[in-house]
Image (cartoon, rainbow, N blue to C red; front, side, top):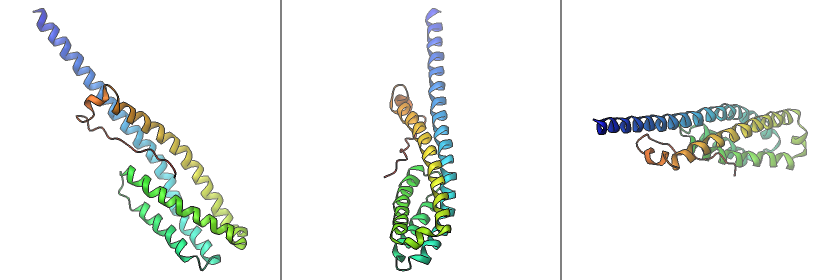
Length: 174
């Protein structure tokens, strides 16, 4: 009779362990998705601002057409990444970030543009968005670190496949 109670107790302990591990995977995944939603809001604000910035620059830097097209193409590519593909979105955002730098380099090359009130206003708005993105990126990377560490350490690594553990990339700027 005692061996049966012992087996029953062990089965209950294993069930509790499985429930705890599963719940931790769910919690970590939801924290990462929540953190990404904060980034997503800031990205959408940036996407909305880019066409105005390009139009303002276009008036001053007419022969810089390829630079402006690169920015618009990078924006469109970032907007077309399927929802939920966080790792794909990170890659697209890094490309967009590179092309945005080229627009601000144009501001240095064209003093009239640099003095334009609309350009300065758009640049300030973009700076505020970038600061919000940086804060959101730090929080996101913290939740990713927690998720990835748990999925790659004991006991999570034992059950990662069974509970559909998802590894997320860090959102780092290049």
